[in-house]
Image (cartoon, rainbow, N blue to C red; front, side):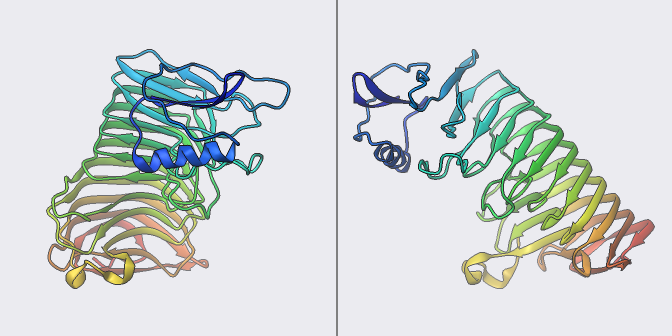
Length: 363
């Protein structure tokens, strides 16, 4: 669809490749009002490709259309004057390389577009994202949703450490996703791993600030697919809230997390370097009877993890009373707090420890 406003000589055109939800239409209207244009929405006009840049100070945004089986339309700033990005993708095969995207930059504070994703792929296969830089997204920076065979490499994400819900890379309902050689600084999870994620490989990533690399939260709904076969290795966490985390709601659920390897990680002043939390329930524990999670966690390995904790308890396994964590393996762990061995805390967690393990295992 196309949203087009203004007179015939000075018109703003917004190109969307799917019908908008009601709240999105409201945001478009709000943006138009901020730009001094009257609200109008046209569903029957074809997309135009580009807003022309003028030296007179008119704002400009380029639109890049990549050829593929399906539709992909990527909107990025062609001039520094306007920092606004919106991408909605439904594509079978696509490649995005060496693109720059910025949203909500302080250089143009007058325009706000509500909750905007920088880059989102849905129900897409065979995707390569290489050399992408995303700055100050108002919501998730990169979303992989319902996709297969996706490779992200050389990605850079940058957002303030206090910016909420700005996940660097958000993966869910997807299989065969690989994330390599990337640097993520954000106010939420560097990488979020959601329900029905399988065969995920993350390697050589620098994370911080942010909330670390997190599986979940999972288990909010009763019926929810599980997460399995996840490898996270060669990661550096710097001043993050968490390092490697598994988080589930404290409520009934039939999901699971299994077959996960966290390996070769360096923690630098991380508040919770290693954590499993199955008691998540915001809003004063409403909707969490007994704080008991139904998500079954098993076969989780932590290997060669070293560094410093910002809190005394560096290892926390707070598992479900109904379904204790099983098959947890600690191998060659050394975490310190203020130059002293850190501590570990366990509840309903079963497993083994081998090699040098500091803090002393509580399994």
